[in-house]
Amino acid sequence: MQAAHNAQIDRYEEMSKKVNQQKYKDMLDQQLEINNQFKMYGNMTSVEKAMNRHDLQAYKNYDTREYSLVPGVSHNKNSSLMVAANVSLSPKKKLDVESKYQDKLQ
Image (cartoon, rainbow, N blue to C red; front, side, top):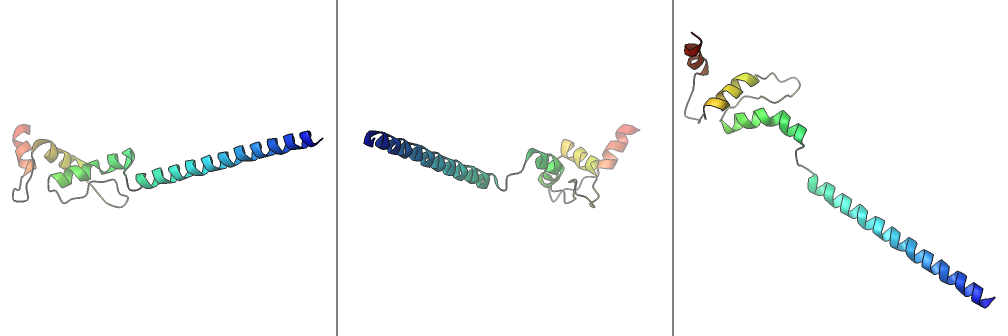
């Protein structure tokens, strides 16, 4: 009888040890997930990058207009893309894009 009782106690201690180990593992996994989320905070998603691509190109070409897809803000993508594809603008240079292309159209 005493041997059976000791075997039950041993099984209980073994089971409680496994349960505690699983709880600890779950807690560490949760900490890793939270840490990874903090590392990702502030990073732009591919969708956000695609939406802001025109603004970034305009910024690189010293263009002060807005080209992002912001609701309520009007934008003209074509003029920025035409300038960005053909000429790199500096703050001191002004380029009349329309007259440059009018000669080719006539």
